[in-house]
Image: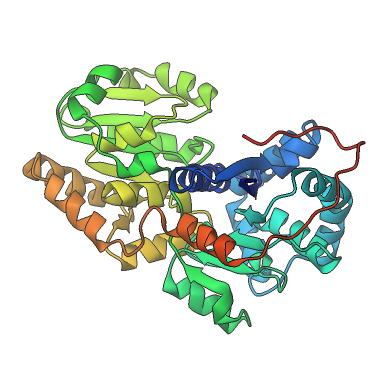
Length: 393
């Protein structure tokens, strides 16, 4: 019997979209032995030379001109993708994406970024019969996510569902599932072993994350990070810089960051373990990072949200009682003093945060599997022999 094939499409504008795709891929395969998956970052896969330039330009705009980005986000908030941008995507991706789908013959396509969702939606209007699911990876919904060709939206909260309905999406096309996170974030790892692995002490610990790119702006390094480092006698700091090795080396050159209880961590795929031994997370309010922290039950402090989706994420997490926006350094003092007073009893707070969550790790995958079971198999024509070979895994 042929296994069901699920193609997950993402884009490299930040790490969260692709993390969600991989998390969902793992969940799907764990939930059913009759499923195979393939995750593709469409831009990087089809245009490996051009894509890094585009992503780099986007990153520079977001980090150096956040007000401009926020203005563009708000101006387009209620609108679908502009005609010019749509034409660009069409010319860059349309025919090649069509060829990928012809070869892979997926039973369902799941998109975790609006761009591949737009491209597949256009293909569906041209005759493609594959069901399209779109996973919205934030706690708000921008107009670019919305297209009438999407068969099902998987969204983070009932509020996002309400916003979709208000914009004309039928309620039957929406499932509130939460944002998928890797199953490892729902496991409890040994704190003793994790501390030994990373050379950490058993003491109040604060994790600091700089977003999907590991980026801290100059003023954030000079004010926030330097101030946090002044607490290192009593608070252990895990400053995670992701793939930004240049920033890590710059911090290592400064005496204040070369303290025994300050650990400058580069890229690692074991953030889930580090969250287990952390008592507080200081982060930008990216949808994926905050959802992972929520799964671990870590209280959060937020800094410098990108105008637009991160502002809305921040508002959601504050409203739900999962964290607070840093409005002054006095707020950092308050939380750090609280941490010192209550350590190690903070595990009870972590449990209460986990209990507040209404959606489980498997809600997205179960929704997709149920849809597949109820759907009829659709035949596909043989793929063109000129299409490059792409394998399932």
